[in-house]
Image (cartoon, rainbow, N blue to C red; front, side, top):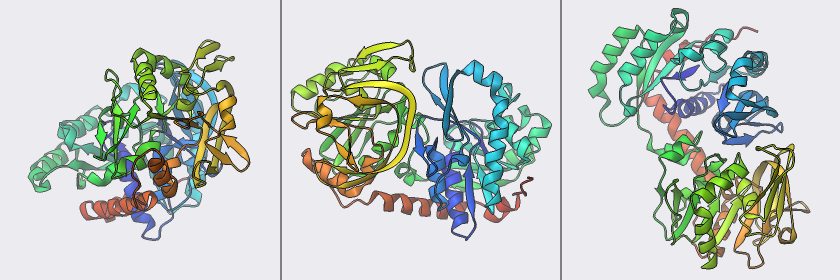
Length: 483
C-alpha cells in the first residue's frame, strides 16, 4: 500500500508506473484505492464510476477498469457535502459530519471489493489518500491505516522533496503515528527530486536513522507526467497556460469542476494555447473558443460563474463571433433554464441559464452512466467517450444535435453552429474528431495520437521508476492477502 506524507505527493502517479512495470513483467496487477475524493471520475466496463486515477492505473496494468478498484468514491457537491458512490453507484448525498460518523459501515464493501480483485491478481497495488499522519481521523479510517490494518497490508511511505520539508514530513509521520501503525510502514521513497539526487544522500541517511525505515530510492522529477490525467482539481489551482499555438482556448475554472481531463488532448495539440482561467481573472478577449467544463454542482457553479463576471465575458465573446462549447454541466449552463424540482443541488426550484442555447434541463435523481460510441454530426467522425450526469435536456436547439448515439440525438447547436453542447465526455481523445473540430473553428489540427502518447508515457514512467527504485526490495515487502 502506497501512502503519502500529504496530498499531491505523487501516490497516484507512482502507483500507475508500478502497475505498468509489473504488468510488463507478466504479472496480473490490480490497482485499488479504498476511498477516494474526486470529481474527476471514469465510467467502468461494469457500468459504474470510479476515480479517474484508478482508471488510469487499470490502463497501466493493461486491464479494463471495474468498480471494485475504487469501492468508495466521494464527489463533493458543496463545501460541506458530497455524493457517496459505493461500488460504482450513487447511494446518498451526505454532509462531511454524517459521513465520518457512519463511515465504518462501508468497510465490509471495501474489503469485499479488495478480496474480489485479489483473487484474480498476482499483485494488488493499493493507494492511500491524503496522509496517515492525520491521526485525528484515525478512528473509523477507511483510506489509510484503517484499511491497512483491516487488510494486513504492508505500507510504503512517499515524500515529495520538491514541496520542502521532506525529512520533517517523513520523520514526523513516524513520530505521530501509533506504534502499531508505524510498524506497518516498511520503507519510504523520495519523489520529485530536481537536480543531482546524490546531493540528498545525507538527507536519506538522517531520515533512515530517525525512522528506522530503509529508503527504496530517490525518484527524479518526471516532467512527462503532464501528459497524463491529473487526479483532482488541486492540479488546476497551479494551472495557467499550456502550449503556444495560435488557436486560443479559454476555460473558466469552476469551483466544482468535474472530469476536467476532457481538456488533456487539447493541451498537447501544438496549434493550441489552452488557458485555465482562475477565479478573479477575466476570460481573455482574444479567445477563439470558450469551453465551459463539467461540474458536480451545475447550479452552484453557474451562480459562481456569474459572480466572477464570466457570464458577461462569454456574452461579449459570443457577440464578437467567438465559439462556445459546453461539456455536460457546462452544456446545461448554456440553456435557458435549469430546473431542480427535487432539490438535488440545494433548494427545489429553477435557475436561469446563460441563454445561449434554446434548451432547458431538468435535474433528476437517476444518474446516466454509460460508455458510448457516437457520430459527430458536423464531420461524420466517430467519437468514443462516456456519459456521467444527472438530468435531461430538451428544446428546439436539440433538433441540431452535436452527436448521434446510434439514432439518438445528443447535445445541441445554435442555428449558426457557434454554440455547442454535449453530454459526452472524453470526446477529444478521438484524434480525427479533434482535428476536424479545431479546423472547423479556424484552428489547425495535427498528427497527434493522444492514446499512443498516453501509452508511451506510461511505458516511460515504468522505466523511470525501475531505474531509480529498488524494485526487488519493494516487491519483497508484498504479503499474501488473507481471505
